Image (tube, rainbow over all chains, first blue to last red; front, top):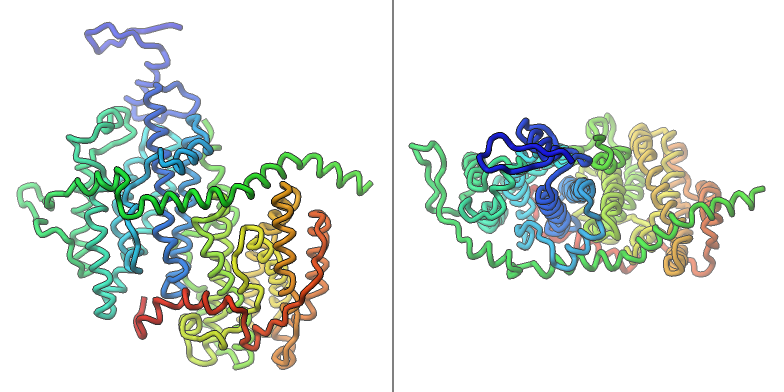
Length: 330
Length: 282
Protein backbone atom coordinates (compact mmCIF):
# COMPACT_ATOMS: atom_id res chain seq x y z
CA UNK A 1 0.00 0.00 0.00
CA UNK A 2 1.40 3.37 -0.97
CA UNK A 3 1.68 5.88 1.76
CA UNK A 4 1.96 9.55 1.95
CA UNK A 5 2.98 12.02 4.56
CA UNK A 6 0.50 14.62 5.69
CA UNK A 7 1.99 17.94 4.74
CA UNK A 8 0.41 20.01 7.47
CA UNK A 9 1.86 18.35 10.56
CA UNK A 10 5.31 18.66 11.93
CA UNK A 11 5.12 15.13 13.28
CA UNK A 12 5.72 12.61 10.53
CA UNK A 13 2.33 10.91 10.62
CA UNK A 14 2.21 8.31 7.90
CA UNK A 15 -1.26 7.77 6.54
CA UNK A 16 -2.56 5.67 3.70
CA UNK A 17 -3.79 6.93 0.37
CA UNK A 18 -7.33 5.92 1.37
CA UNK A 19 -7.15 7.87 4.56
CA UNK A 20 -5.85 10.86 2.68
CA UNK A 21 -8.77 10.56 0.26
CA UNK A 22 -11.17 10.33 3.20
CA UNK A 23 -9.66 13.42 4.78
CA UNK A 24 -9.84 15.26 1.47
CA UNK A 25 -13.52 14.39 1.05
CA UNK A 26 -14.28 15.62 4.55
CA UNK A 27 -12.23 18.74 3.98
CA UNK A 28 -14.06 19.45 0.71
CA UNK A 29 -17.44 19.02 2.44
CA UNK A 30 -18.16 16.11 0.14
CA UNK A 31 -20.04 12.92 1.02
CA UNK A 32 -18.56 9.66 2.24
CA UNK A 33 -20.38 6.72 0.66
CA UNK A 34 -20.69 3.12 1.94
CA UNK A 35 -18.01 1.70 -0.36
CA UNK A 36 -15.48 4.41 0.48
CA UNK A 37 -12.72 3.71 2.94
CA UNK A 38 -13.39 5.22 6.35
CA UNK A 39 -11.62 5.15 9.70
CA UNK A 40 -12.97 2.55 12.07
CA UNK A 41 -13.78 5.25 14.61
CA UNK A 42 -15.86 7.14 12.03
CA UNK A 43 -17.79 3.99 11.19
CA UNK A 44 -18.37 3.12 14.85
CA UNK A 45 -19.38 6.63 15.73
CA UNK A 46 -21.91 6.68 12.91
CA UNK A 47 -23.36 3.28 13.75
CA UNK A 48 -23.75 4.43 17.33
CA UNK A 49 -25.41 7.70 16.37
CA UNK A 50 -27.65 6.36 13.58
CA UNK A 51 -28.83 3.32 15.51
CA UNK A 52 -29.55 5.45 18.59
CA UNK A 53 -31.52 7.73 16.37
CA UNK A 54 -33.44 4.78 14.89
CA UNK A 55 -34.14 3.38 18.36
CA UNK A 56 -35.42 6.79 19.43
CA UNK A 57 -37.90 6.81 16.57
CA UNK A 58 -39.11 3.33 17.50
CA UNK A 59 -39.37 3.88 21.26
CA UNK A 60 -40.75 7.33 20.49
CA UNK A 61 -43.80 5.74 18.91
CA UNK A 62 -45.00 4.57 22.32
CA UNK A 63 -45.81 7.79 24.17
CA UNK A 64 -47.95 8.91 21.24
CA UNK A 65 -49.51 5.61 20.29
CA UNK A 66 -50.81 5.75 23.87
CA UNK A 67 -53.42 8.25 22.61
CA UNK A 68 -54.34 6.86 19.19
CA UNK A 69 -57.35 4.97 20.48
CA UNK A 70 -58.49 7.96 22.60
CA UNK A 71 -57.84 10.87 20.24
CA UNK A 72 -60.69 13.34 20.76
CA UNK A 73 -61.72 13.81 17.12
CA UNK A 74 -61.46 11.69 14.00
CA UNK A 75 -59.24 14.27 12.35
CA UNK A 76 -56.84 14.19 15.31
CA UNK A 77 -56.93 10.40 15.33
CA UNK A 78 -55.99 10.30 11.64
CA UNK A 79 -53.18 12.80 12.14
CA UNK A 80 -51.81 10.94 15.14
CA UNK A 81 -51.91 7.59 13.38
CA UNK A 82 -50.10 9.09 10.40
CA UNK A 83 -47.53 10.65 12.67
CA UNK A 84 -46.73 7.53 14.65
CA UNK A 85 -46.61 5.59 11.41
CA UNK A 86 -44.15 8.15 10.03
CA UNK A 87 -41.95 7.42 13.04
CA UNK A 88 -41.90 3.72 12.19
CA UNK A 89 -40.90 4.77 8.67
CA UNK A 90 -38.09 6.95 10.03
CA UNK A 91 -36.85 4.04 12.10
CA UNK A 92 -36.76 1.93 8.96
CA UNK A 93 -34.78 4.47 6.91
CA UNK A 94 -32.31 4.91 9.73
CA UNK A 95 -31.79 1.21 10.37
CA UNK A 96 -31.18 0.89 6.63
CA UNK A 97 -28.59 3.67 6.76
CA UNK A 98 -26.84 1.90 9.65
CA UNK A 99 -26.94 -1.35 7.69
CA UNK A 100 -24.84 0.29 4.95
CA UNK A 101 -22.10 0.50 7.59
CA UNK A 102 -22.23 -3.23 8.29
CA UNK A 103 -24.56 -3.20 11.30
CA UNK A 104 -27.41 -5.73 11.14
CA UNK A 105 -30.96 -4.94 12.08
CA UNK A 106 -31.15 -8.04 14.26
CA UNK A 107 -28.09 -6.96 16.26
CA UNK A 108 -29.41 -3.43 16.66
CA UNK A 109 -32.83 -4.71 17.73
CA UNK A 110 -31.29 -7.18 20.15
CA UNK A 111 -29.16 -4.44 21.69
CA UNK A 112 -32.24 -2.27 22.12
CA UNK A 113 -34.42 -4.85 23.80
CA UNK A 114 -31.54 -6.06 25.96
CA UNK A 115 -31.34 -2.51 27.31
CA UNK A 116 -27.77 -2.10 25.98
CA UNK A 117 -28.50 0.52 23.34
CA UNK A 118 -29.37 4.10 24.08
CA UNK A 119 -32.29 6.07 22.73
CA UNK A 120 -33.40 9.61 23.42
CA UNK A 121 -34.26 9.91 27.11
CA UNK A 122 -37.19 12.16 26.32
CA UNK A 123 -39.28 9.12 25.48
CA UNK A 124 -38.98 7.83 29.02
CA UNK A 125 -41.44 10.49 30.11
CA UNK A 126 -45.15 9.60 30.28
CA UNK A 127 -48.04 11.07 28.29
CA UNK A 128 -50.86 11.29 30.84
CA UNK A 129 -52.84 13.92 28.92
CA UNK A 130 -53.98 14.64 25.38
CA UNK A 131 -52.10 17.94 25.50
CA UNK A 132 -48.90 15.88 25.59
CA UNK A 133 -49.54 15.10 21.91
CA UNK A 134 -49.26 18.85 21.38
CA UNK A 135 -46.15 19.28 23.52
CA UNK A 136 -44.37 16.35 21.94
CA UNK A 137 -44.97 17.83 18.50
CA UNK A 138 -44.14 21.39 19.42
CA UNK A 139 -41.28 20.89 21.87
CA UNK A 140 -39.88 17.41 21.29
CA UNK A 141 -40.17 17.35 17.50
CA UNK A 142 -39.18 21.01 17.48
CA UNK A 143 -35.97 20.19 19.34
CA UNK A 144 -35.43 17.19 17.09
CA UNK A 145 -35.68 19.42 14.02
CA UNK A 146 -33.07 21.83 15.39
CA UNK A 147 -30.82 18.84 15.97
CA UNK A 148 -31.58 17.15 12.70
CA UNK A 149 -31.64 19.86 10.04
CA UNK A 150 -27.83 20.20 10.23
CA UNK A 151 -27.59 16.40 9.95
CA UNK A 152 -28.99 16.63 6.42
CA UNK A 153 -25.47 17.85 5.58
CA UNK A 154 -23.78 15.07 7.58
CA UNK A 155 -20.67 13.81 5.79
CA UNK A 156 -21.98 10.25 5.53
CA UNK A 157 -24.19 10.11 2.41
CA UNK A 158 -26.91 7.61 3.39
CA UNK A 159 -27.40 9.30 6.77
CA UNK A 160 -27.63 12.79 5.27
CA UNK A 161 -30.13 11.65 2.66
CA UNK A 162 -32.27 9.79 5.19
CA UNK A 163 -32.30 12.93 7.29
CA UNK A 164 -33.54 15.08 4.40
CA UNK A 165 -36.62 12.94 4.14
CA UNK A 166 -37.11 12.71 7.89
CA UNK A 167 -36.81 16.46 8.40
CA UNK A 168 -39.53 17.16 5.87
CA UNK A 169 -41.92 14.97 7.81
CA UNK A 170 -40.77 16.28 11.18
CA UNK A 171 -41.74 19.79 10.23
CA UNK A 172 -45.33 18.60 9.72
CA UNK A 173 -45.13 16.88 13.07
CA UNK A 174 -44.06 20.03 14.80
CA UNK A 175 -46.78 22.05 13.13
CA UNK A 176 -49.53 19.62 14.11
CA UNK A 177 -48.27 19.71 17.72
CA UNK A 178 -48.38 23.48 17.73
CA UNK A 179 -51.92 23.34 16.33
CA UNK A 180 -53.07 20.95 19.05
CA UNK A 181 -51.83 23.38 21.70
CA UNK A 182 -53.27 26.38 19.86
CA UNK A 183 -56.68 24.72 19.77
CA UNK A 184 -56.47 23.83 23.46
CA UNK A 185 -55.40 27.35 24.44
CA UNK A 186 -58.39 28.73 22.55
CA UNK A 187 -60.68 26.26 24.32
CA UNK A 188 -62.18 25.85 27.76
CA UNK A 189 -60.41 26.67 31.01
CA UNK A 190 -59.79 22.96 31.53
CA UNK A 191 -58.24 22.66 28.10
CA UNK A 192 -55.97 25.65 28.71
CA UNK A 193 -54.81 24.13 31.99
CA UNK A 194 -54.21 20.83 30.24
CA UNK A 195 -51.97 22.60 27.72
CA UNK A 196 -50.01 24.65 30.28
CA UNK A 197 -49.50 21.67 32.55
CA UNK A 198 -48.16 19.68 29.65
CA UNK A 199 -45.77 22.44 28.51
CA UNK A 200 -44.54 22.66 32.11
CA UNK A 201 -43.68 18.97 32.08
CA UNK A 202 -42.03 18.83 28.63
CA UNK A 203 -40.11 22.10 28.42
CA UNK A 204 -36.99 21.18 30.42
CA UNK A 205 -36.72 17.62 29.15
CA UNK A 206 -36.95 19.02 25.60
CA UNK A 207 -34.02 21.38 26.30
CA UNK A 208 -32.05 18.42 27.59
CA UNK A 209 -32.54 16.65 24.26
CA UNK A 210 -29.62 18.66 22.88
CA UNK A 211 -27.32 16.75 25.18
CA UNK A 212 -25.00 17.85 27.96
CA UNK A 213 -23.33 21.28 27.92
CA UNK A 214 -20.44 21.56 25.48
CA UNK A 215 -17.79 21.31 28.19
CA UNK A 216 -19.27 18.00 29.31
CA UNK A 217 -19.96 16.30 25.94
CA UNK A 218 -17.41 13.54 25.38
CA UNK A 219 -18.21 12.61 21.77
CA UNK A 220 -18.90 16.01 20.31
CA UNK A 221 -15.45 17.25 19.28
CA UNK A 222 -14.55 14.28 17.10
CA UNK A 223 -18.04 14.22 15.54
CA UNK A 224 -17.68 17.86 14.63
CA UNK A 225 -14.22 17.33 13.16
CA UNK A 226 -15.64 14.52 11.01
CA UNK A 227 -18.53 16.77 10.03
CA UNK A 228 -21.09 14.26 11.26
CA UNK A 229 -22.19 16.95 13.65
CA UNK A 230 -22.12 20.62 12.61
CA UNK A 231 -23.07 22.64 15.67
CA UNK A 232 -22.42 22.24 19.38
CA UNK A 233 -25.11 21.15 21.84
CA UNK A 234 -25.29 24.55 23.48
CA UNK A 235 -25.50 26.39 20.15
CA UNK A 236 -28.44 24.28 19.05
CA UNK A 237 -30.17 24.60 22.43
CA UNK A 238 -29.88 28.38 22.24
CA UNK A 239 -31.24 28.42 18.70
CA UNK A 240 -34.22 26.35 19.88
CA UNK A 241 -35.07 28.61 22.81
CA UNK A 242 -34.83 31.68 20.57
CA UNK A 243 -37.37 30.03 18.30
CA UNK A 244 -39.69 28.95 21.14
CA UNK A 245 -40.12 32.25 22.93
CA UNK A 246 -42.16 34.01 20.20
CA UNK A 247 -44.13 30.82 19.51
CA UNK A 248 -45.05 30.50 23.20
CA UNK A 249 -46.33 34.07 23.04
CA UNK A 250 -48.58 33.19 20.11
CA UNK A 251 -49.88 30.18 21.99
CA UNK A 252 -50.35 32.09 25.21
CA UNK A 253 -48.44 29.52 27.26
CA UNK A 254 -45.78 30.37 29.81
CA UNK A 255 -42.40 28.70 29.48
CA UNK A 256 -41.60 27.36 32.97
CA UNK A 257 -38.29 29.18 33.41
CA UNK A 258 -38.52 32.23 35.73
CA UNK A 259 -34.98 33.25 34.77
CA UNK A 260 -35.60 33.35 31.03
CA UNK A 261 -34.79 36.84 29.76
CA UNK A 262 -33.68 38.65 26.63
CA UNK A 263 -30.03 39.62 26.59
CA UNK A 264 -29.66 42.93 24.77
CA UNK A 265 -25.98 42.41 24.28
CA UNK A 266 -26.13 39.00 22.63
CA UNK A 267 -29.62 39.49 21.19
CA UNK A 268 -30.45 36.01 22.49
CA UNK A 269 -32.71 34.62 25.19
CA UNK A 270 -30.68 33.65 28.25
CA UNK A 271 -32.09 30.65 30.02
CA UNK A 272 -32.05 29.61 33.64
CA UNK A 273 -29.92 26.81 35.01
CA UNK A 274 -30.77 23.38 33.68
CA UNK A 275 -31.02 20.70 36.34
CA UNK A 276 -28.81 18.06 34.80
CA UNK A 277 -29.29 15.73 37.76
CA UNK A 278 -32.65 14.78 36.36
CA UNK A 279 -31.15 14.19 32.90
CA UNK A 280 -28.52 11.89 34.35
CA UNK A 281 -31.11 10.09 36.47
CA UNK A 282 -33.27 9.34 33.43
CA UNK A 283 -30.20 8.42 31.40
CA UNK A 284 -29.16 6.03 34.16
CA UNK A 285 -32.48 4.23 33.83
CA UNK A 286 -34.24 5.92 36.71
CA UNK A 287 -36.76 7.91 34.68
CA UNK A 288 -40.52 7.53 34.94
CA UNK A 289 -41.00 5.06 32.09
CA UNK A 290 -37.67 3.48 31.15
CA UNK A 291 -38.71 -0.02 32.16
CA UNK A 292 -42.15 0.25 30.61
CA UNK A 293 -40.81 1.44 27.24
CA UNK A 294 -38.31 -1.38 27.00
CA UNK A 295 -40.77 -3.99 28.16
CA UNK A 296 -43.29 -2.92 25.56
CA UNK A 297 -40.68 -3.11 22.78
CA UNK A 298 -39.52 -6.51 24.02
CA UNK A 299 -43.08 -7.80 24.26
CA UNK A 300 -43.89 -6.68 20.71
CA UNK A 301 -40.68 -8.26 19.48
CA UNK A 302 -41.18 -11.54 21.32
CA UNK A 303 -44.88 -11.81 20.56
CA UNK A 304 -44.09 -11.20 16.90
CA UNK A 305 -41.35 -13.80 16.72
CA UNK A 306 -43.60 -16.55 15.39
CA UNK A 307 -44.79 -14.20 12.65
CA UNK A 308 -41.26 -13.30 11.55
CA UNK A 309 -40.27 -16.97 11.64
CA UNK A 310 -43.28 -17.83 9.51
CA UNK A 311 -42.42 -15.15 6.96
CA UNK A 312 -38.80 -16.34 6.79
CA UNK A 313 -39.85 -19.98 6.46
CA UNK A 314 -42.34 -19.07 3.73
CA UNK A 315 -39.68 -17.16 1.81
CA UNK A 316 -37.34 -20.16 2.00
CA UNK A 317 -40.08 -22.51 0.79
CA UNK A 318 -41.14 -20.29 -2.11
CA UNK A 319 -39.30 -22.14 -4.91
CA UNK A 320 -40.60 -25.50 -3.69
CA UNK A 321 -44.18 -24.23 -3.36
CA UNK A 322 -44.05 -22.79 -6.88
CA UNK A 323 -42.83 -26.12 -8.28
CA UNK A 324 -45.58 -27.97 -6.47
CA UNK A 325 -48.20 -25.68 -7.99
CA UNK A 326 -46.71 -26.03 -11.45
CA UNK A 327 -46.67 -29.82 -11.09
CA UNK A 328 -50.27 -29.81 -9.95
CA UNK A 329 -51.26 -27.59 -12.86
CA UNK A 330 -49.55 -29.72 -15.53
CA UNK B 1 -22.64 4.89 -4.78
CA UNK B 2 -26.29 4.29 -5.34
CA UNK B 3 -29.00 5.19 -2.89
CA UNK B 4 -30.45 1.72 -3.03
CA UNK B 5 -30.25 0.85 0.63
CA UNK B 6 -31.76 3.97 2.05
CA UNK B 7 -34.39 4.46 -0.60
CA UNK B 8 -35.66 0.88 -0.65
CA UNK B 9 -37.98 1.36 2.22
CA UNK B 10 -38.98 4.82 1.16
CA UNK B 11 -39.85 3.70 -2.35
CA UNK B 12 -41.85 0.83 -1.04
CA UNK B 13 -43.77 3.14 1.22
CA UNK B 14 -44.44 5.46 -1.70
CA UNK B 15 -46.14 2.67 -3.62
CA UNK B 16 -48.98 3.13 -1.27
CA UNK B 17 -48.81 6.87 -0.93
CA UNK B 18 -47.05 6.76 2.41
CA UNK B 19 -49.28 9.01 4.44
CA UNK B 20 -47.96 12.06 6.17
CA UNK B 21 -49.82 14.19 8.60
CA UNK B 22 -50.85 16.85 6.11
CA UNK B 23 -52.98 14.39 4.15
CA UNK B 24 -55.76 14.31 6.63
CA UNK B 25 -58.45 16.67 5.51
CA UNK B 26 -61.63 15.50 3.87
CA UNK B 27 -61.75 15.79 0.12
CA UNK B 28 -63.36 19.06 -0.91
CA UNK B 29 -66.10 17.39 -2.93
CA UNK B 30 -67.16 15.47 0.14
CA UNK B 31 -67.35 18.53 2.35
CA UNK B 32 -69.13 20.73 -0.16
CA UNK B 33 -71.40 18.06 -1.60
CA UNK B 34 -74.45 19.64 -3.13
CA UNK B 35 -77.09 17.52 -1.48
CA UNK B 36 -77.84 16.23 1.96
CA UNK B 37 -78.34 12.53 2.45
CA UNK B 38 -81.91 11.28 2.85
CA UNK B 39 -82.60 9.44 6.11
CA UNK B 40 -82.33 6.07 4.37
CA UNK B 41 -79.11 6.94 2.59
CA UNK B 42 -77.75 8.31 5.86
CA UNK B 43 -78.58 5.03 7.55
CA UNK B 44 -76.74 3.14 4.83
CA UNK B 45 -73.75 5.49 5.10
CA UNK B 46 -73.73 4.77 8.84
CA UNK B 47 -73.55 1.04 8.16
CA UNK B 48 -70.47 1.43 6.04
CA UNK B 49 -68.99 4.29 8.05
CA UNK B 50 -69.28 2.44 11.35
CA UNK B 51 -67.64 -0.67 9.91
CA UNK B 52 -64.71 1.44 8.72
CA UNK B 53 -64.47 3.38 11.98
CA UNK B 54 -64.52 0.36 14.29
CA UNK B 55 -61.99 -1.51 12.21
CA UNK B 56 -59.72 1.55 12.01
CA UNK B 57 -59.93 1.90 15.79
CA UNK B 58 -58.82 -1.71 16.19
CA UNK B 59 -55.92 -1.39 13.75
CA UNK B 60 -54.77 1.81 15.43
CA UNK B 61 -54.09 -0.23 18.55
CA UNK B 62 -51.46 -2.28 16.66
CA UNK B 63 -49.22 0.68 15.90
CA UNK B 64 -46.00 0.27 17.95
CA UNK B 65 -46.93 -3.34 18.78
CA UNK B 66 -46.67 -5.08 15.40
CA UNK B 67 -44.43 -8.12 14.80
CA UNK B 68 -42.08 -6.03 12.66
CA UNK B 69 -41.69 -2.36 11.78
CA UNK B 70 -42.91 -2.95 8.26
CA UNK B 71 -46.19 -4.13 9.75
CA UNK B 72 -46.47 -1.12 12.05
CA UNK B 73 -46.37 0.87 8.82
CA UNK B 74 -48.66 -1.44 6.84
CA UNK B 75 -51.36 -1.86 9.50
CA UNK B 76 -51.14 1.86 10.15
CA UNK B 77 -51.70 2.52 6.45
CA UNK B 78 -54.73 0.25 6.34
CA UNK B 79 -56.13 1.88 9.48
CA UNK B 80 -55.54 5.35 8.04
CA UNK B 81 -57.33 4.47 4.82
CA UNK B 82 -60.25 3.13 6.81
CA UNK B 83 -60.48 6.17 9.02
CA UNK B 84 -60.56 8.25 5.84
CA UNK B 85 -63.50 6.19 4.58
CA UNK B 86 -65.20 6.47 7.97
CA UNK B 87 -64.84 10.25 8.01
CA UNK B 88 -66.29 10.63 4.51
CA UNK B 89 -69.18 8.28 5.20
CA UNK B 90 -70.03 9.65 8.65
CA UNK B 91 -69.77 13.20 7.39
CA UNK B 92 -72.26 12.33 4.66
CA UNK B 93 -74.54 10.44 7.09
CA UNK B 94 -74.53 13.48 9.34
CA UNK B 95 -75.89 15.75 6.62
CA UNK B 96 -79.30 14.14 7.14
CA UNK B 97 -79.49 15.17 10.78
CA UNK B 98 -77.18 18.17 10.96
CA UNK B 99 -74.54 16.25 12.88
CA UNK B 100 -70.77 16.21 12.31
CA UNK B 101 -68.56 13.17 11.82
CA UNK B 102 -67.43 13.64 15.42
CA UNK B 103 -70.98 13.92 16.76
CA UNK B 104 -71.61 10.54 15.21
CA UNK B 105 -68.34 8.93 16.27
CA UNK B 106 -68.18 10.25 19.82
CA UNK B 107 -71.68 11.01 20.97
CA UNK B 108 -73.70 8.00 19.91
CA UNK B 109 -74.09 5.11 22.30
CA UNK B 110 -73.82 1.45 21.47
CA UNK B 111 -77.38 0.77 20.22
CA UNK B 112 -77.03 3.61 17.71
CA UNK B 113 -73.95 2.08 16.11
CA UNK B 114 -74.52 -0.02 12.99
CA UNK B 115 -71.26 -1.96 12.78
CA UNK B 116 -71.03 -5.62 11.84
CA UNK B 117 -69.90 -8.06 14.51
CA UNK B 118 -66.87 -9.11 12.51
CA UNK B 119 -65.23 -5.68 12.80
CA UNK B 120 -65.98 -5.68 16.53
CA UNK B 121 -64.01 -8.88 17.10
CA UNK B 122 -60.85 -8.14 19.08
CA UNK B 123 -57.40 -7.96 17.49
CA UNK B 124 -56.32 -11.20 19.14
CA UNK B 125 -52.95 -12.35 17.89
CA UNK B 126 -51.57 -11.26 14.50
CA UNK B 127 -53.31 -14.23 12.85
CA UNK B 128 -56.73 -13.10 14.11
CA UNK B 129 -56.10 -9.56 12.92
CA UNK B 130 -55.06 -10.89 9.50
CA UNK B 131 -58.00 -13.29 9.25
CA UNK B 132 -60.43 -10.48 10.13
CA UNK B 133 -58.76 -8.16 7.62
CA UNK B 134 -58.73 -10.84 4.94
CA UNK B 135 -62.47 -11.41 5.25
CA UNK B 136 -63.44 -7.75 5.55
CA UNK B 137 -61.12 -6.49 2.80
CA UNK B 138 -62.41 -9.04 0.32
CA UNK B 139 -65.97 -8.08 1.20
CA UNK B 140 -65.25 -4.34 0.98
CA UNK B 141 -63.52 -4.74 -2.36
CA UNK B 142 -66.60 -6.39 -3.86
CA UNK B 143 -68.84 -3.83 -2.19
CA UNK B 144 -67.00 -0.68 -3.26
CA UNK B 145 -66.39 -2.04 -6.78
CA UNK B 146 -70.16 -2.05 -7.24
CA UNK B 147 -70.98 1.02 -5.16
CA UNK B 148 -68.98 3.09 -7.68
CA UNK B 149 -72.05 2.77 -9.90
CA UNK B 150 -74.43 4.02 -7.21
CA UNK B 151 -77.08 6.50 -8.33
CA UNK B 152 -76.01 8.56 -5.31
CA UNK B 153 -73.08 10.67 -6.50
CA UNK B 154 -71.49 11.06 -3.05
CA UNK B 155 -71.54 7.34 -2.29
CA UNK B 156 -70.19 6.65 -5.76
CA UNK B 157 -67.33 9.12 -5.22
CA UNK B 158 -66.43 7.67 -1.82
CA UNK B 159 -66.50 4.15 -3.26
CA UNK B 160 -64.33 5.10 -6.23
CA UNK B 161 -61.61 6.36 -3.89
CA UNK B 162 -62.01 3.55 -1.34
CA UNK B 163 -61.90 0.66 -3.78
CA UNK B 164 -58.30 1.40 -4.78
CA UNK B 165 -57.22 1.42 -1.16
CA UNK B 166 -59.17 -1.67 -0.22
CA UNK B 167 -57.56 -3.46 -3.15
CA UNK B 168 -54.22 -2.99 -1.39
CA UNK B 169 -55.67 -4.14 1.95
CA UNK B 170 -56.94 -7.26 0.22
CA UNK B 171 -53.52 -7.97 -1.23
CA UNK B 172 -51.76 -7.33 2.09
CA UNK B 173 -53.97 -9.70 4.06
CA UNK B 174 -53.94 -12.34 1.30
CA UNK B 175 -50.14 -12.39 1.29
CA UNK B 176 -50.12 -12.85 5.04
CA UNK B 177 -52.70 -15.65 4.95
CA UNK B 178 -50.40 -17.49 2.54
CA UNK B 179 -47.26 -16.76 4.54
CA UNK B 180 -48.81 -17.90 7.78
CA UNK B 181 -50.42 -20.97 6.24
CA UNK B 182 -47.17 -22.15 4.62
CA UNK B 183 -44.78 -20.70 7.19
CA UNK B 184 -44.20 -22.82 10.27
CA UNK B 185 -46.37 -25.40 12.02
CA UNK B 186 -47.19 -22.82 14.62
CA UNK B 187 -48.20 -20.12 12.14
CA UNK B 188 -50.32 -22.63 10.25
CA UNK B 189 -52.07 -23.67 13.43
CA UNK B 190 -52.66 -20.03 14.37
CA UNK B 191 -54.08 -18.85 11.03
CA UNK B 192 -56.27 -21.92 10.81
CA UNK B 193 -57.62 -21.28 14.33
CA UNK B 194 -58.14 -17.61 13.58
CA UNK B 195 -60.13 -18.25 10.41
CA UNK B 196 -62.27 -20.70 12.36
CA UNK B 197 -62.82 -18.15 15.13
CA UNK B 198 -63.81 -15.38 12.71
CA UNK B 199 -65.88 -17.39 10.27
CA UNK B 200 -69.10 -17.42 12.35
CA UNK B 201 -69.33 -13.66 11.68
CA UNK B 202 -69.09 -13.92 7.89
CA UNK B 203 -72.75 -14.76 7.40
CA UNK B 204 -73.99 -11.48 8.88
CA UNK B 205 -72.01 -9.46 6.32
CA UNK B 206 -74.18 -10.71 3.49
CA UNK B 207 -77.62 -10.47 5.08
CA UNK B 208 -80.16 -8.16 3.48
CA UNK B 209 -82.28 -5.75 5.43
CA UNK B 210 -85.51 -3.92 4.50
CA UNK B 211 -83.42 -0.74 4.18
CA UNK B 212 -81.78 -2.22 1.08
CA UNK B 213 -85.15 -2.66 -0.61
CA UNK B 214 -85.73 1.06 -0.25
CA UNK B 215 -82.34 1.93 -1.77
CA UNK B 216 -82.51 0.12 -5.10
CA UNK B 217 -79.80 1.46 -7.39
CA UNK B 218 -78.22 3.41 -4.55
CA UNK B 219 -77.02 0.75 -2.09
CA UNK B 220 -75.45 -2.58 -2.93
CA UNK B 221 -77.53 -5.59 -1.87
CA UNK B 222 -75.31 -7.49 0.61
CA UNK B 223 -76.56 -10.93 -0.45
CA UNK B 224 -75.55 -10.15 -4.03
CA UNK B 225 -71.89 -9.94 -2.96
CA UNK B 226 -71.62 -13.41 -1.47
CA UNK B 227 -70.92 -15.34 -4.69
CA UNK B 228 -68.17 -12.92 -5.73
CA UNK B 229 -66.71 -13.05 -2.21
CA UNK B 230 -66.65 -16.84 -2.25
CA UNK B 231 -65.06 -16.90 -5.70
CA UNK B 232 -62.39 -14.40 -4.65
CA UNK B 233 -61.29 -16.16 -1.50
CA UNK B 234 -61.50 -19.75 -2.79
CA UNK B 235 -58.19 -19.72 -4.69
CA UNK B 236 -56.40 -18.10 -1.75
CA UNK B 237 -57.66 -20.72 0.67
CA UNK B 238 -56.83 -23.43 -1.86
CA UNK B 239 -53.28 -22.15 -2.26
CA UNK B 240 -53.03 -21.87 1.51
CA UNK B 241 -54.40 -25.42 1.79
CA UNK B 242 -56.90 -24.18 4.32
CA UNK B 243 -60.51 -25.36 4.39
CA UNK B 244 -63.43 -22.99 4.52
CA UNK B 245 -64.37 -23.32 8.17
CA UNK B 246 -67.68 -24.92 9.10
CA UNK B 247 -69.46 -24.67 12.41
CA UNK B 248 -71.15 -21.86 14.27
CA UNK B 249 -73.00 -19.05 12.57
CA UNK B 250 -73.35 -16.04 14.85
CA UNK B 251 -76.76 -14.42 14.96
CA UNK B 252 -75.30 -10.95 14.47
CA UNK B 253 -77.64 -7.98 14.50
CA UNK B 254 -75.16 -5.13 14.21
CA UNK B 255 -77.20 -3.29 11.58
CA UNK B 256 -80.10 -3.19 14.07
CA UNK B 257 -77.89 -1.96 16.92
CA UNK B 258 -77.43 -5.34 18.60
CA UNK B 259 -73.73 -5.69 19.17
CA UNK B 260 -71.06 -8.04 20.40
CA UNK B 261 -69.81 -7.78 23.97
CA UNK B 262 -66.66 -6.14 22.66
CA UNK B 263 -68.14 -2.95 21.24
CA UNK B 264 -68.93 -1.24 24.53
CA UNK B 265 -65.32 -1.48 25.69
CA UNK B 266 -64.05 -0.21 22.37
CA UNK B 267 -66.43 2.76 22.46
CA UNK B 268 -65.64 3.54 26.09
CA UNK B 269 -61.98 3.89 25.20
CA UNK B 270 -62.56 5.75 21.95
CA UNK B 271 -65.01 8.26 23.43
CA UNK B 272 -63.60 8.81 26.93
CA UNK B 273 -61.74 12.08 26.43
CA UNK B 274 -64.28 13.72 24.14
CA UNK B 275 -67.12 12.94 26.51
CA UNK B 276 -65.23 14.37 29.47
CA UNK B 277 -65.32 17.77 27.74
CA UNK B 278 -68.76 18.38 26.25
CA UNK B 279 -68.77 21.26 23.80
CA UNK B 280 -64.97 21.47 23.58
CA UNK B 281 -63.27 21.58 20.21
CA UNK B 282 -59.94 19.86 19.53
